Image (cartoon, rainbow, N blue to C red; front, side, top):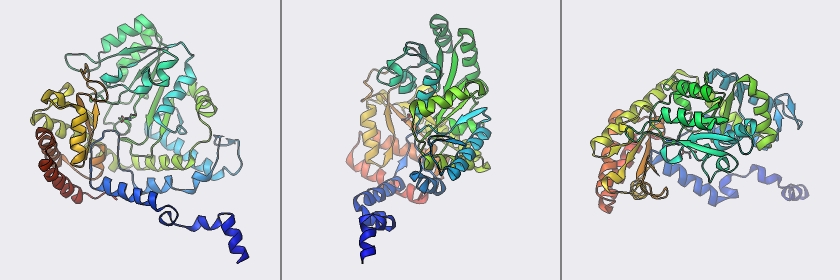
Amino acid sequence: MAVLQEQTATGHDFLQRSLAEVDPEIADAINLEIQRQNDTLELIASENHVSRAVLTAMGSVFTNKYAEGYPGKRYYGGCGPTDIVENIAIERAKKLFAAEHVNVQPHSGSQANMAVYFAVLKPGDTIMGMDLSHGGHLTHGHPLSYSGRDFKVVAYHVRKEDERIDYDEMDRLAQENKPRLIICGASAYSRVIDFKRIRQICDRSGSLMMADIAHIAGLIVTGNHPSPVPYADFVTTTTHKTLRGPRAGLIICKEQFAKDLDRAVFPGVQGGPLVHIIAAKAVSFQEAMQPEFKEYQTQIVRNAKALAQAVGDAGFRIVSGGTDNHLFMTDVFSKGITGKDGQNMLEAANITVNKNTIPFDTQKPMVASGLRIGTPAVTTRGLREPDMKTIAQLIARVLDAKGDNGVIADVKKNVKDLCDRFPIY
Ligand code: DSN
């Protein structure tokens, strides 16, 4: 009895109790989320469904470990297994991306970008990035982000006539402003990015080049999109979008920047690495090296093209007229529906997308004229081109009925039938 009381006092018995026993509210919420994901057509372009292997690594005892530093050079004892994990993650990422140097510690894409800025920029330096409303990202110089606070930011855009990146404007702005760093990569752009051309622009203006490939990393490792690695000084990515790993970040750089970059990640912007997440990254890199992963990425693009075509056939304007990658933007305001309302109507039918501004948008970001639609998650669960036609019809029914409750209820049933044919977890 005395021993038991002592164990209780030190919390030892807690170690053995299930989540449902310890915290039924959170256990229930997790179960609700499993149910939601199973019953939902997930078309948010930046989301995916990871494997059980990735989930297992994320939920492993490595969450208990502190490991400031890098393999072989840690500030804490007991880092033997941690070094195994981080070294494997580094080697796999180097092979996957054909990279000279890789840092696998960034907790997120935002922190990966911050580390690159810390490594090569000083406050007051000029940077160039794509305007957020034209498809860029907050961390590419938006005034509300850290990236827009300490630097002089020059934004480049897409052309009005074809909604594709205006490389001539980028070149002209680079010549006029001589930025220290030109950032390319996007979160809402459906066309191939010409990394070689951007390298030439950087060389003419004496700028460093950073490619943020968060959205298209999976397409890049499988050759479904040209790689920036041969051209860019720095390549940043998240690991959870098309790459289908844990929610985290990664940085690739040329060997000459390796030391500065590693110092910028730790101790520059982060403390202890999340070793459990690095373990999960390693697992996802292993998965990404398999032949099936190439088939998966190829199918993502086929599905995106089929879905864009079918949504266009249903009368919705597709930004830039189509897609080369995993996503497309549709201008729902062309049919008198705001992005905000469209997102809400579709969510009611268990189809999730996100409202998004489109180039030259007349609506505010919280309202927006567009919906961003992507296929990584539905492709993971096994849907193919014929299913994309079905999904487009369901989307069009909900939007054309302006969210009519009867139509939503009927579409929700169709969504459930489709989801039941393709279970996830
Ligand atoms: N939030 C991500 C996306 O949805 O694209 C970018 O950080």
